[in-house]
Length: 161
Image 1 (cartoon, rainbow, N blue to C red):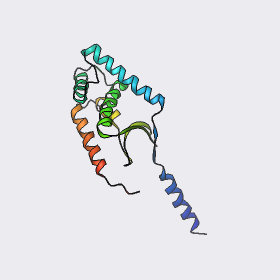
Image 2 (tube, rainbow, N blue to C red):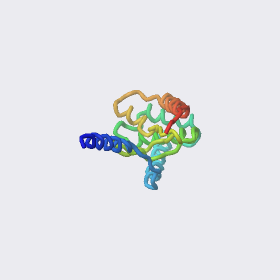
Image 3 (cartoon, helix red, strand yellow):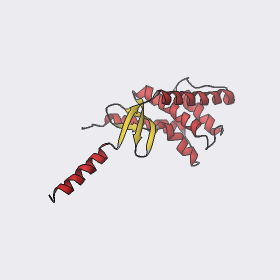
Image 4 (tube, rainbow, N blue to C red):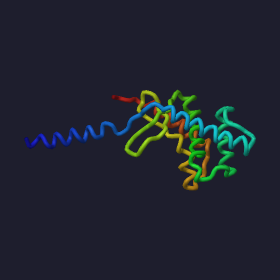
């Protein structure tokens, strides 16, 4: 009997940690939200700079950098800043065979890129907004390259389940 209580606590602790996170497919609402943010940022680029997104990764990254350098989006405009991260993520997804998912854990729900079969995730949506929010310099190309290196590192991992 004196071994049952510790055993039950151990089983509870294990089961409590078993689902520290989970992923779900993007809902139609998530897909619409992301598309609306892309369009909103594209409209800003067209009106302010006479350019648009969708002309390749290099062009899109330069356009994001120009928007930031010209202070066309303020630190409080989280949705537009996160739209920049969505565009980064779109390029990572296409070029690396990733997929957008909803990542949920104890802290909440996030849009993330899943590296298939690896149980590893990238969070490009907040890469720019979190830097701008604290007044840090933002080098869009460097952020993208870091995410690419991280993707390559994850893909090389051997996962034992």
